[in-house]
Length: 68
Image 1 (spheres, helix red, strand yellow):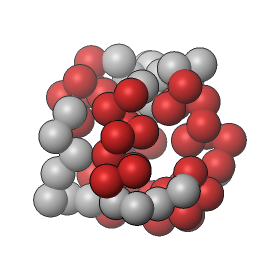
Image 2: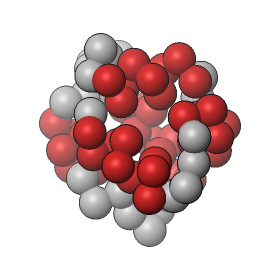
Image 3: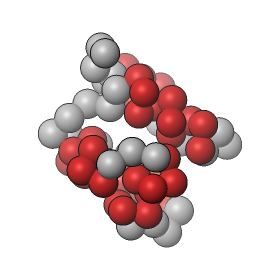
Image 4: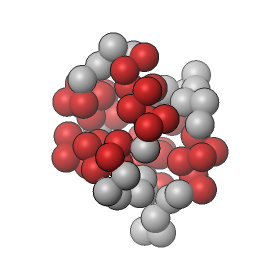
């Protein structure tokens, strides 16, 4: 998911740093960024909680959510 990668890079964070910030595993971030896994609702909730000011494509993320 290129949008997520672009957002992370715009924050100046590595995948490890970004994962730590949103309290998910590095592995999960890598999988979501690469498109190997769709973001779960929990992932999106954590992302919104940490960055409420906006991940501009959060609606795009929500459309791709896996059902938990």
